[in-house]
Length: 319
Image: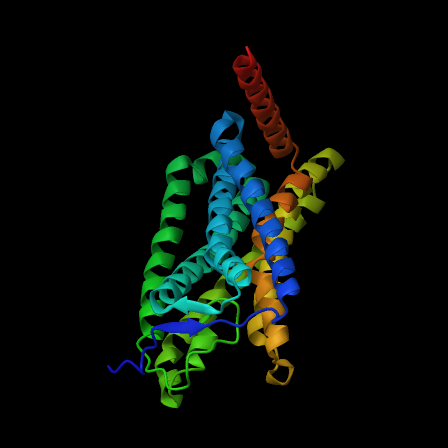
């Protein structure tokens, strides 16, 4: 292929051309990124170090925190660097890597949220068989299936996307390398080769969404039949955070990709991309810790342990 078919770099869409606003954008994204690192890092450490949290629900939550860290680290650091250094460029290899990583993490998160719904369904609707159905080996196999299948899907999807000749320049109307924006640069007949992947995405997404709805219908029916108010509150405390995360994730992505063409604009696409790629990884730890007493206690214990350890080291150095 000639060099014009595959550009050496792409130009990303800047949030603003004003230097002061670029620095403001850098500061805002830095704050969100640090919040995501802190929140998800605390969940990872708390679940790994606290033996009381070595259960299927928290094992899947640990995987979700890993996916959130991966997805936000794929897009935000490059956007911050571009704002700080007043540039728009991203290399071709960097763009390919960004597409691959983002597809992997976002797809895996959707599948993992579906598995987490199944875990809550078994725990509430079949409590006597929970330990038998959701044993450690089954949980590891489920997580491995999610990571393995999404890795393979991302490889094929990324390879297919960048196999198209790019005939419409190298400027992307997004702050990161997003597949729909890359396809807009391709020749008109290139979209036909993407149909199979789009059909697969639609079918798998529909199946997962239907499974999520069915799981929560059964869960709420079982919870409302519980005679104890305390039992209902405990069930809701484990289900509502997951349902909130699922709603935030699905609603943002559906509106971003299924909105009418008449509503499409660079500013709106930029805002929606921030909502589904940047906001969820930062707020998910907060959502999960709001009504989960076990997780809040584990994080508090971890923070106090870190505080006293730091204090002990400080006084040792002073002596």
